[in-house]
Image (tube, rainbow, N blue to C red; front, side, top):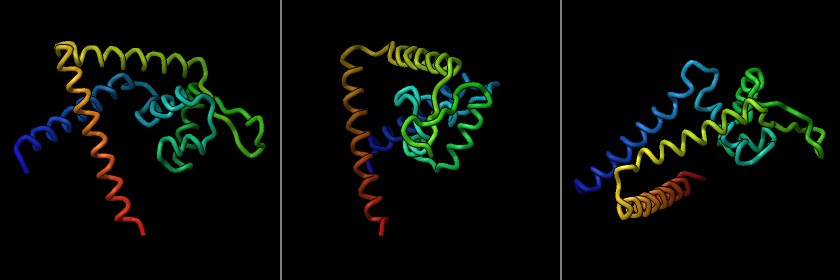
Length: 152
């Protein structure tokens, strides 16, 4: 293994840790956890969704999503409503409070992105973006190969 490869991996891991810590800070002292915020983020993208669809999107069990939705409903961030075409299902929807929180998350994300790359030249931003994209694609390929080997 080359020292360049280790330096890059260490840098990516350090950056991932810093981003995770920074993302958790706005939720300190609130009823939101990273998992609950992730569910709100999915609803932002998908719109009203069944709990099964949320479980799939979050890659967690339906039981886990039930707990998340229960907590978010109690705090007023989401509401449940009957599904219009499936009597057995309910839809989870963002409330006005949930929408406000998601809009704050979007604004914080945009500000964080701008702040993070503020000292990079345009060419550095382009090169870093392209490099990170290649690394992410490579890692996805590596994980897919590993999963195929591990599956029966």
